[in-house]
Image (cartoon, rainbow, N blue to C red; front, top):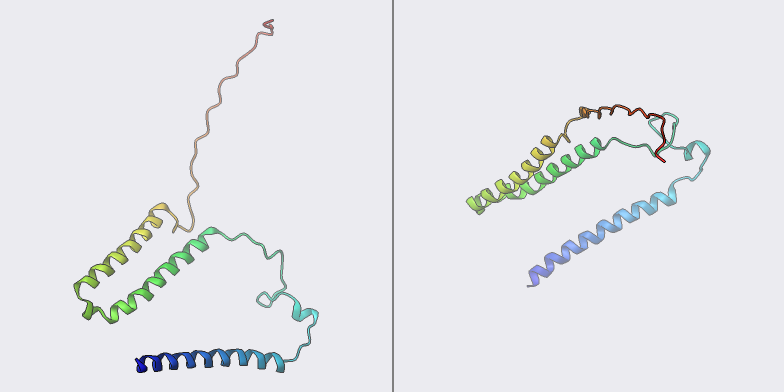
Length: 144
C-alpha cells in the first residue's frame, strides 16, 4: 500500500513541477519581452502578404470530410498500438476484437467511398427538365 502511494506521489510531484515549469516560462517571458505595439505588428499576418478580403471565407466541405477521416484512422492507430504490445498475452480473443474494430472502421470508409464523399470533384447531377405543357388557347368568351 505504501509503495502505491509512493508511486502516485512521484507522479503528482512530476505533474506539479511540469505545471510550475510551463507557467514560470510564460511569466518570465511576459516580464522580459519588450512591448512596443505599432500598426504593422498589430496587422494580420498572412504568409508575408497583405491580408485581402474577409477572414470569413466559406471552405469547401470536402476539406472537413478528408480531415475527419484522417482523424478517425489516426485515432485507430492510437488504439492499435497498446493492443499490439500485449497481443501475445491476450491471445485469439484480442485478435477477434481488433478485427471487429478495424472492420467497423473499414465499413465506415467504404460507406463514405460509395456515397461519393471521397470524390474531390463530384459530377453534377443530370436532372431532366419537365416538358412544357401546350398552352390552351382561349376563345375570348367569358363564362358569365
